[in-house]
Length: 165
Image (cartoon, rainbow, N blue to C red; front, top):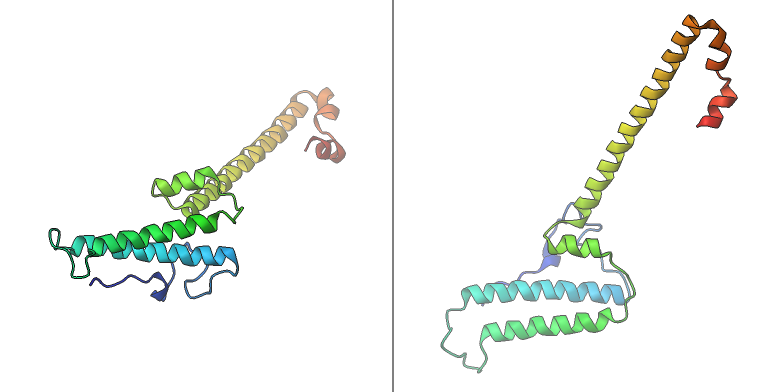
């Protein structure tokens, strides 16, 4: 029989995981659902290895059931249990997150990339604002130097500057 995969037996956790694999699941229905999802992952892994290793396609097992059928039944039972438990959970998951998962993208990585992009755009905009203030100061100085009669209008008081911001 194939070796069973146990995601809880790993000593390290994924770098993007919000908690280590050694920590207990949350209490209540969400913890039960998390354990059921881990069981489903284990059942799917076992089913995959069973399909690969199953060389008895035409012969039945002595008990009357093939290993692939038993594995498929285990997966179906986990899915049924997850569906039943999901009825009691009101947590909404954004469609974009589900779409990212379906497209084999890590939502945590996408969130990190979006935050980095927002920070970069923020720095870029701050640079533009600083450049405009610097240009305005230089322009006002040049206008005041060449047109002294406009100097009182070109150098606003600090209160006027604060009001503009």
